[in-house]
Image 1: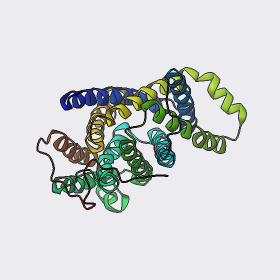
Image 2: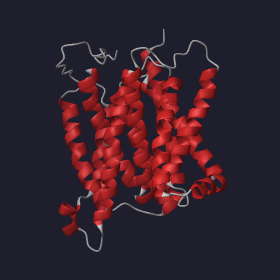
Image 3: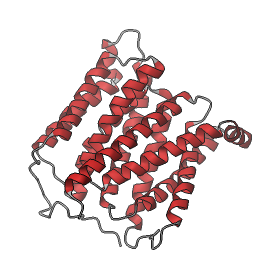
Image 4: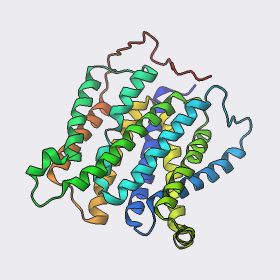
Length: 321
């Protein structure tokens, strides 16, 4: 029997590898101005789907369509695919730090979703963390109605619009993360296969609508195939490692650890590769968010369980026939 300590250590290693691959991927997306982000998201899903299909085909007795879980897997895959497309689009218009700062509140919503759907722990500490994270989110998003009088010669309207796009993607993606925890008994490659298949068509449709030219589509694939392949490979391993980590611990713990690493990587990459420093409000907001993430991660005492369902914490009340 595998010990709990071993599972937690392996989960942290998985998260570190997932964060590294995701950080490198974000830099490539940010710098690839000639490639439509919708096409990049679609091609990434296609390549991940083919790789996952090849790997899972070598296994025996793999259930591609687990009975009773199809609807839940479809919802999870749809949420994850929409979140990825929105984030790819936001990377093109926002600094890496700003995208990651807004995405960093994902554990807040994962905690809420996990409490409601999975009856995972949620106590006073988690409620305070949610409040502090929301304050940090406002400082990072900088809504014009609050911050326009405080900033001189800065146009916050565009920044706010794109951060709203990231926020919507974060809300949807948090639901996907929580459902991944509910599907922890499903094979990792099967989940990856489903997720990538659902992500192929939305990005392709959006690309064709925005660039109504088949020649443009073919030229992009021909001229930038290496970049598209690199992003696809990095995304595959990032997703694979993240799903593996979710199988080793609570969804909120893994999500908090992942987002803490994402913030650090984004901050370093933004300065090193783009020589772009966040403003004071973003730094204060990021500090609040990161402090809640680190406090939750290093908190040793178990949270007081508030279980309104009067069910065991490990109970998964989602049943799909």
